[in-house]
Length: 303
Length: 294
Image (cartoon, rainbow over all chains, first blue to last red; front, side, top):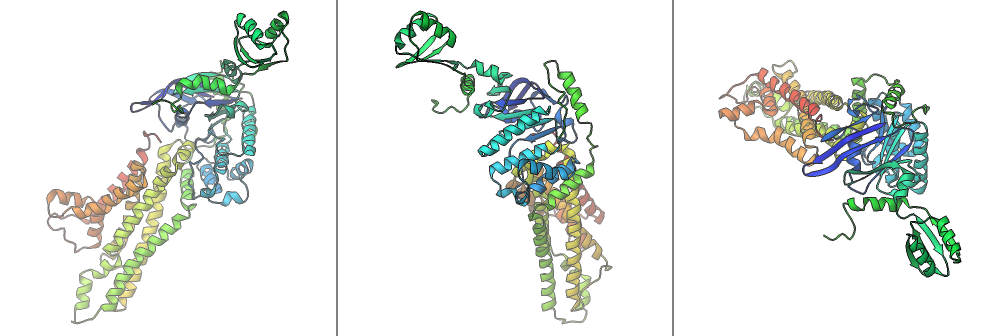
């Protein structure tokens, strides 16, 4: 359980995070979404006690993380795959972390095997690792203490499709084991098949904290696609019923009425339907619409 | 990897969730400082650059000392009876046991070695991984300082003793060498050895404050080497500063004939300067990480 309360972080005149309040619960994967520069990494650093909040508080398992003398058995974190010394081997890097936390040396071999770095790779200097391999090493470090809470900042960056699939499976399994899994991303599509719950922020402020399905329903993208030879006539009927209709030749995109109601109306007016397909709301659209106001770096923005 | 799935969190679960975590992590062993010492020791020696840095420094410093002794040996001609006695009486064999050229290189290298242990972590971002794994930041830095102090002390002693014995062996070829029980000989060796951890800890403290390699090295060199050169021992305030710096302290300890006549000071004062600088450096290293964002 991670509890963030009225969290604010200012750097001089810039406010990175403002009055953020949310709870990340155990037993599910919680996505932490926001455009670049929204304050995700700053928030994660404050959860880990690396940065002190200007005001507000954050606790992990009921206590500020910095009150723990040793951290790995409480929170496993991958903040940035680059937060390693390139001169060490993967084994040495993990052995150092394990030793300081009094974790048995064999855990190093276990987690290396788990993330697929066992064998030749573990003895190589990290400087020669690809980004994907570094992500795996960072995940291995997070798993080292077998912690009840796990934080991952953009863990899918640099992973190949097989790696992405593996990470998703891992997150699901960790959550199923009853752990708290908090995963940040700036891409909604990465969350679509991973997260159960979402925390969405923009410009440091909370936009949404709810389940993935409820969040998806916010998108106005949900609608029905209708194909009919008498498109103009049907469009008039549907508009009269209060729907928003966009016509493209024989194709209508309808929002505001469900597929059943559209079918009934077409039948009553004896208009033939060749296709009637409900289009599910896209998470991506919901995300874009909600964060459109809070994107710091918008392409093509007039300056 | 067995974990109960009892914590199917509910909205009311703030208190219950906390309790279940406390129960979950009961297997945690007590935090021990020696684990951090062991971790820092592993950290130091798992870098290939560490043994190289020490080896190259040792070769350079011993090389300078041996070279000077050999030069004396090669060009020594006894012109007058009593030359040899005057040579020894003036303390030249001891001056050649650890020359002032060699000590410059030695201090520079030790300062850099100390700085790298901290700046290497800030430069790579490893420091965040370190502090996320061990939130007790002061303990981490204290362990780091202890390992650096211990390793550089042993290294300094090694270099100082090897320098002493090899230079005196060479000088003995012309009957000029002295033994370790010669007055002041042991003090030259110990003062040179201990200047190593002092310089390393100062580099480390500056690295902790500045966090960047370039500025840290410049500030370390300025503090340890440039500052002593710009202060004059002939003016009161200037002499006061000079007397409080490690490098002049080393000179005072190793060159009994060195001129600090106008504002004299004691050997005990010189040792005190060593101790105060080392302790202050450790204090800065340990306490300055507490409040700053990492």
